[in-house]
Structures are given as structure tokens and as C-alpha cells.
Length: 622
Image (cartoon, rainbow, N blue to C red; front, side):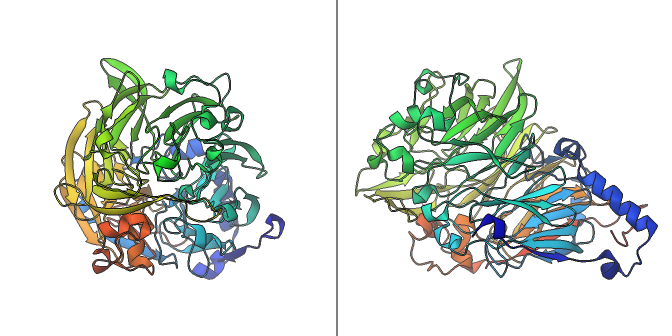
């Protein structure tokens, strides 16, 4: 597919047709005003609580909304306001965006129009336009863990879309017109793109998926206006390609040295070593730094890659303009268990030990909740938030995690009681932070596994795993948990266990309510202070999406989430996978064999509200 000939399908719905209104000077003036406001910078939009302009709500990844019309005292009256079908019954992991009364949402790669983007009136659900790219059908064959999309990005009047076949697309936010298309990766190598891009400082940042296909990970910055690549930083290889230079100052001595991204691997193995960047990005406007984590090294069979395998399972801080690395910290040197560290990095200013610290809080897939100094990369604390058997803690002096050598994987031998299992204590599903309660709200799984390492050869575009895995519930028999964590006290405040993994994101609000969804179709609202369930409803399919909240032009606060089970844990319910084969889906089927008893795939956007408050006006049209 050539970028210059890449076709688009844009469906425009005239306001005159949709609402039977004649064109008028008033309507034209309103449209012009809306177009002008749509070109506001992301920073100004994020400062208005009525919007949800970034998948994570803000650059700090807090997923906190200052809206409080819905609160702990009235959330029990929440009702469905409107719904919309995305048209593809696969895993619905995306976060809707809401900018100046318009909602933007993207579907997964499936159905008649893969990765289709919809623009909807945020108060009524009326369709304004849609855009359907024409991605290469072969992308579906190399996607590791369902054909999901985790969302869109917005800045300066443009919507930015990542397609599964490694293209980034810029659309005019008002019309849906395709502005440019940039090819970033190669599906023939096993590369795909599933992450939500991040727009900041005139650029759009995105990384690749495919760590289980022998892909070499990267983060790429694209110019918002031209679609040209500004810089690319690889996760493995020589310093010149990892963009490590004289400004690179990691806190720990073992992370200092020339070309560690190549020398910590067997010869040339770094070229197929993983470290993909498919999770969440944070941005600090004050320092102009982008923070993100890299994925696991490949293959899973660690016997084939002696060494620390830098810079996989690592958190990076990079200059947004040049891509130059400022510091890095590797959480799991020579990762043994597929413990990617692509999870979100929440940027918080915390009082620790009587001092204000600028921190980065990272819920490690390895089971430890890290509080890191975001200026230096020093680990301030690292405490287990779920069952951990494969490590014995984190040495805060050296920063190195301490492996449990008794559980070291041996070739062709099954090692039992591996906790956390390969999906980690928490995967990509993002937590939320409330500045009111000073708590983090963490959706996660509670799984252990049996692990058998075996030899595997690299063939471009084919699986490069080298392990057979059987997952199951952790201690206590439950497979998921939603917990509140105090990062200063370094402890749980409260928690709720779930029978299935909690694979949805979390949302916290100034109304002291937190929201999340379950794979067995429950969407829940809890008291942020106590964890008491205040409201819940059954959706049409399981929830693995990201809840958001916003205020419509009618003065009503809405809560929205996509319903549609899938993702790595949910493909057994929406794809042709035999639930009796426990090691299918890289071993996740063993943990969720009963999921098809609770749900099937879905494609519904659900939007809830309390109705119209006294004095508010019901909208009659855009």
C-alpha cells in the first residue's frame, strides 16, 4: 500500500439533513466559532474539565476529572443516556476523546471497516462524520494479542490515528478529511501498532508492537503538520540508535557505559530483541521530557539471550524535541517471565520523608509499585502490590531487582508457581490518581503460571516466543483485583477481588467516585474513599475499555466506556480459539477457560448520565 495512494472513506452527515434545520447566519457563525476553538492547544483544552482531550485525560496520566456533578451521593441514579455501535465485535480497549462537545472514538482492526474513526455529538450521540482507512489485511495475521486499538490523539485541530498495519494518519477534526499518512513500520517483520499516540510540543509520538515476533522496539516522533519523522529512538542496539549521548545520566552505575544496548546481548541478538513500545506515554511540559516504558526481551526463553538485555523492560526519559535519552532505569534485567514495563508512568508531586519530590509512579508488571524520582531515575520505593514469588525484592541501593534463583527457568523443564504470570501483576490497563484522596486506583490481574522454556528460531514475521505457559488463579482463587494504593504510605488502602482479571482502565473524579469494568459485563462505580460499591450495571459484553467522563454542551456530566471483551485475556470469547486448550493465546486461555460462559464479543459505546439537572437545557442539535 503506497502512502500517496492510500484511499479514505469519509462519511459526512449534513447538519441540515440530520436535524432538518435550514442553513442560517447563526449556524454559520457557530460553526466558525467551533472550528476556531477546535484548534486550541492541547494544554488549554486539558485545563477545561469539560473535555477529555487525551486518552489519559492529561499529560501526567492521572485519569482524574475535576467534574463533580456525578458524586458518591447520587451516582446510584446513573442511567444510560445513549449508545453507539462501533461495528466490530473484537476487543474494545480504546478511550474516547471529547473535545469541545465532539466525541472521537476508534474501533479495533476487524469488521467491514478496520480501525474506523467516528466523530459524534457528545451530548446526543449523533454521527458527525466517520473515516475508514484501508489497512493491509495481512496485519491481522501478525498481531500478537488481539487486533485492538487503545485510542486516538488530538492537537491543534487534528485527530491522530495509529492503524494496525503501522501507519499514522492525521485527520481534520472538524471534517474527518485525511491530511497526511506516514508509514512507520513493516508488518513483514511482525511489527504492528496498537497504542494510543500522544501529541505534544508539535509532535506525535508512537511506538511499535510485536515483541513476540522478534521485533526491535522503537519510539518515533512525527511532525504534526507534515507527517515527517523527526526522530526515532530504538530500545536496543548501539548508543547512536538508542539516542544515548553525553546528556545521558542514569542514576545507577550499572546502567552507565558505552553501547550497553548492544553489549548486554549475544552478538547481534539485539536486532531481534524486543523492547517494543506499545503502552503509555507521559509528558512533562516543564522539562519537555517524554517518559515511557519498553517491553520484554525476546524470546521468552531467556537461555537464548544471556546478559542484562538492555534497554528492554526499561523506563526512559527523553527530550521531546531531539529524542535524546536523559536517564533510563531497567526494572527487570535479563527478564525471565515476559514482564514488559510498558505500563503507565503517572507524574506526581508527592511529599515523601518531609520533602516535596517530583516523582514518576509506575505499577510494575513484575509486581512492584515503583516511586521514582523523575528528574534522576532514582528508585525511591518499590513495594509488592500483588503476589510475587519470582523475585525477592528490589535493592534500593543498587536499583536491581533480586531474582528468586530457585525458580529460574531451565530448558525443557516445567517451572511451577510463577507469580506474577507473564501478563504481570498488571498489564496495560491504566490506573487512576485522585488528588483528593491521594490514592491510586489500580485495576489488575492476580495470576500465576507454570512455565516451560524451549528453543526457538527466528523467522521474520513469525512467532518468536520459546516457551509454553499455563496460567491459573493466584492464591485465594480469584483472578483479578481493583485496589486503592497509597504511594506515600506504600500500602493498600482497600481492595476488591474479582473472579476474572480486571482488564479495564480506571477513572477517578472530584465527586469521589471511581469507575472500572469487569470481563463478566459489570460496569461499576465505587466510593473512592472506602471502596464501597455504589452502582453497577451489566453491559452487552465484557469491559476491557477505558472509562472517561466529560460535560456536554447541555450542562450534563457524562461517563462513557466501550463494551466489547477481547484483548489478550479475552480472545477466547471473541475468536476461534478452543477453550479446552489451556496454553492457547500464549497461555492465557488456561486462566479464563470459563470466560465464554459470561460473555461474547461486542462493539457498543455506552454513555451514562444522571439526566438533565434543573435549569439545564436539552440540546436540540449541534
